[in-house]
Length: 145
Image (cartoon, rainbow, N blue to C red; front, side):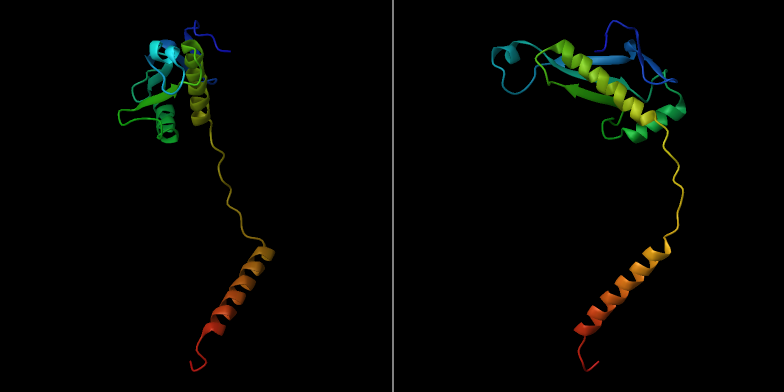
């Protein structure tokens, strides 16, 4: 389990984000749960300003903005929510763990694709399929043509 008391979040060897850059919002969870749901704000929303974070270089910022564009709003703020448990602390820890995993995946360098040529057998199969398809279409034609 993660400790909230630590002052920095270790993402990878190059990136460490201070906990002070993360903002948390607590609201009431939805769904069943009776009186507990009605009284306690256990749903946690973590917000991180990717666009203006001093902990990220321009290259890292750009990579994160592209990789996580589905969870980053128009102002460059990353939103992660959790309401899976009845405990605010566990939901908070869950959002922090997901935040770390998302950033780690977004900052992971992608392997460069090495272009390959089709094999002789695959080229032959492709041409054979084209000939079969052509024959089928040829059989559909009017005999007068």
